[in-house]
Length: 349
Image (cartoon, rainbow, N blue to C red; front, side, top):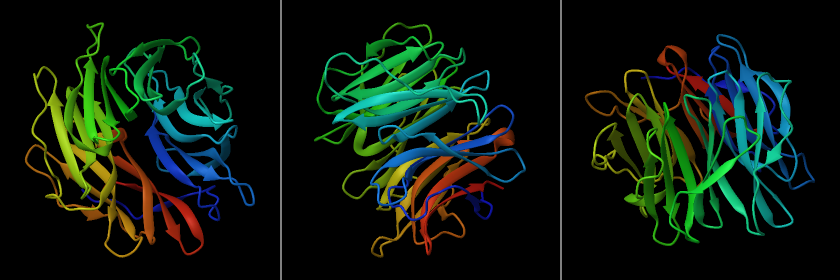
């Protein structure tokens, strides 16, 4: 697998270093949508969520600010079966962190941002999002260190359940849906254990959580009976992967797509219709603050050699990968250029 030369995503405030946190989806019409955290122009030390879209075969079109209240960040984006785009994010005001939600069908038709209900005075952190085959919205988040699951059929009324054991240490959850099966994972602070649990469509309770390995920044993807977990392992931050087949009693062994090479951060995963896996991540290049966005793929036989995306700036960081129509992989990422922060996309060829 190779990728095209990069294409600029317009609308990024290049002068503000707060620009980060980029995500993308492709909807049923083949339109690619991208959301990122953008810095408010100086002197304000704040940020907003901005977005852009790219119809299949056309250029990116900037749409400006999507959310501006209370420094929104950590966006997660998904598409419902009816084409509705759902965005969740974390925001903070007066020291309290909340989970915000909004939906849109077109660029000019976003619903007002709403906050997940929250009992008590604690904070909610780091939302992950998945939408199942019935259109149910699922949000996984950390409520003061305990992983919680919120679900809603219409994005208006929400039900809640606890997923992890009660704790003050479980953070950075991730979530994937395959038809109506759900898969969750998270990191335990202090021990750096990465945990996983599942909720099958015909079950009413999450499975007992198990440790997948050690590290952080765990991500999940699931499609057609295959679940993939990837994280940055241990002190060396080597890219680690485990897979779970539908019906299997246990996860497969840990694999190292780059043979344990160090300095690999923020992995993201996509799966195509044939069950081939694609990964993107932030690779430390060993020279000061020089990072590049790398990718690798696995077919039925083996992992490909890791490669850097073409035409990168000096510091590639926030990245995301998604599988679109005709099994084309789309990567979006941010980089430091001579004139400041920029956002880019590239497509597999």
